[in-house]
Each structure stands twice: as structure tokens, then as C-alpha cells.
Image (cartoon, rainbow, N blue to C red; front, side, top):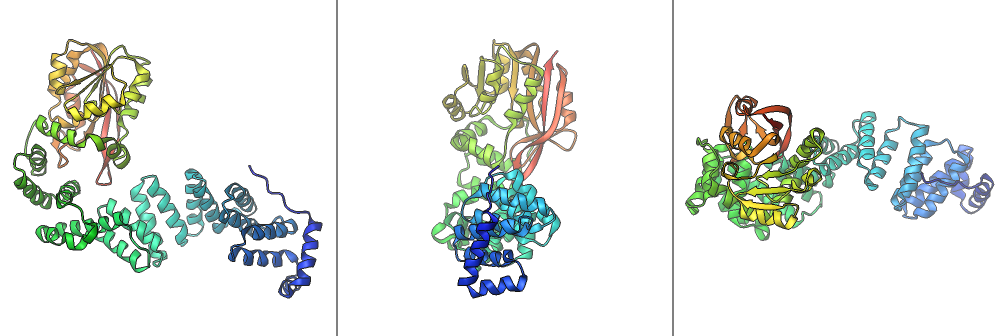
Length: 497
């Protein structure tokens, strides 16, 4: 920890004598309080308020040489160090303040701010929470905590913190601005537009991307209220020079509104989009999913077309926006059971996100996917000894290879009845081989085609299709986010009988 050297008391008293002679107000404060530390603190605050940070820090240090057990002086010194970008010194000073007075909410707030500046999120979060526990009506602490949780992508808790901050301090434009972004993620489109408008009213201008988000929020809200055609007609006027292509707006509106349960509105938009391109397999399948049509699996033309289009943005969308981390979670569970594998198959390999996680477990890795675009991205990433364009069940049934590991992260969600795939996987595994997979969890007893176009499987269905396997492990966990909300799923590890 950085050490703060306080001046010698004799040096400080010489400074006090000089200040008493040159500054009558300083002398009066000394006489009034009977101790020069108070006068030095007042002078330090004046220097700080006028931007003379170095002089303020020296003045606070001088005061502390006379009153080293004063927690408020240590907090003042920490604050002025932080204001002058000397964060390690600020950390030392504020920790000293809290040693002397651990129940001071303002000092915990200062520690939280220093932790934020040092990018120590654990320390900052703990300090914000301690601040709020000591003073629940501290708007800056709720705002700081909300922004920190926003960065950590804990959206629901961040939104709650920002709502409290705005209620306590309704004239903070930054809080309204952040609330607007979080409200959009939470699909509170009316609240999003209100928050952005309030930020503007409080003289905080919106950047172009935020103005686009506001226009989307107003448009999506009008659609939810049943005014789909009117919303699209008004969009260009609302968005102005920040307008996006209407095809992108309807595509994203369909996706968001179907994910948030506004199925009738989504179906209206889906029919409009399919009428524009009646032979588009992506638009046709996703509309069928929203309408609840019965099917056994996602059509191959949908998967090829959708993922070929999606491939360049796939990684950032899945890992950053949707917080998808299945390959790492599954590889960690595998490593707990076996140290290595002779020949591994990444079934539905996509862009190859699993390759880096599987490489420590073996050198022979085959990747199979139906999308040429995804395979091209996997080839760029590297890590595969072979990449094959094929449908999953057909490949498993037709290959001469025998694997001791089949790894299927986020690929079984495009199959309804898992029976045929499970039987084909068993045939492609050596006895004792492992099958690691993930599925989205259905709350009922069977299989459900969701409006997203992905299938959810119940635990009962999964167990009913694994007669060729011994179940080694089933872990329930959140697989990803969907419309800002966690999607429950299962990580499953099976062993071939």
C-alpha cells in the first residue's frame, strides 16, 4: 500500500504562524476553534473548490499532522487525491478514514468512487452497498452501484438501483440517461423514452446511437399498443436524421416482441415481413414458431440461411450481448471427469467457440456444422483437424469415425424429439465415450418450440431418450439471455453404455 508522509508538527506550526499573519480570516478561525487543524481544513477546502488540488492536499496533510485521528480530514485528503488522479494515495487515505470511523456512509461512498476509478469492481460494489446500508437515501451511491452493475451486465439489479437513484435525485441527467438504456434492455420501452426525454430536459444531449434507441423505443411501444402500421409510418419522422432502414426495424421488432410475449403483434409483423419475401426460409420458420406450428426440427434451409447471415456477428452477439458461456462451462465439467480424449467431435461447431476450450483435452477435433458461413469463421479461428459441412443426425449416422467425445453446445436446441439424434450419437461413440450437451429447459414434460425458433426440452424428455447412455451429470443453469432475461437450461454429461 502507498504510504502517506505527513509533515513534521514543527513545520506545520510554522505554516500556521505564517497564515495567521497573512490571512486574518484564518487567524479568526483558529481563535474561534482553539485549534489550527480546523482552520487548515477550511483553507484546504477553499483550495480544493478552486481547483488547486496540490495545495489543498498539502494543506489537508498539514492539518492531519496536528489531528491524525480525524477521519473527516483523511476523507478530505482522499477526495482531493482522487480529484487529481492520485488514486493509490486516495485509497490509502480513505482506508485510514474508515479505520477511524467505519460507520461513516460518506467515507464508504468515497472508497466506492476510488474503487471504480481503479477498476476494482469487487471493492467498489462492496463499498457502494455499505454506503446504502448506512444511508439508504444516498442517490449517488445508488447511481454508482447501478452503473457498476450495468457494466457487469446484472441488468435487473442495475435497473432497480437506478430507479431508486432517480427517485431520490430526479434532476440528475446522467441517472436518467443510464435509466433509459437499462429500460430498453428490460423492454420497458415507454420508460426508456421517458428517461431519455428527461435527460434531454436536464440539458444532457443524446448521442446518435441513443437517439436511435429512443426512436426504436417509441416505435416498439406503439406496436405493443396495437398500432403497428401507424408506428412504421411515423418512424422516419420520429428518428429524423438518425433513422435506420425500416427492414432492420421490423426485423428487430419481430425478434424483441416475440421474445417478450407480444405474440399477436409479432405475428402481425412477421406476416408483413413474409409477404415482402415469401420464399425467405428464415422469415417463414420464425413466423411459424411464433404461431405455434408443430414441427420436429428447425428446417435445414432456415439453419443454413440464418447462420450464414449471422456468422460475422455471431461471436459478439452471443458472448457479449447474450452472455453465452456454455463451451467453457461444459469443458470444465468434462475435465472434472476425464483428462484427455483421443478423437473429439464438436457437433454444431458454429464459429468454433468451443475449440479453445477443448484443445487442452485432446489434439484430434472434428467440427461439423450445416452453415458454410459458420464453418468459414471456425476455420479462421483454427483448432480443428477437420471441418465438415453436414446436418448433425445425417453425419452421425453416416460417419465411419468413432469418437470418444461428442460435444454439442447450443445445437440440440434446433431439434424437437431428441430420440433420433441420441441414437445416432450412441452409434458414433465408442463404448464408454462421453456425450456433453446443453439444452434449454422446458417447464413441462415434453418439448416446446419457442417463439425464438429454438426448442426447449424437459428433463423427462431428455431422460426418456438416453437409454443408450448412463447419465453422469445434469446441472441446471442459465444458458443465455433472451430479451434481457436469463434463459434456464441444462448442462448434461452422458456416458455411452
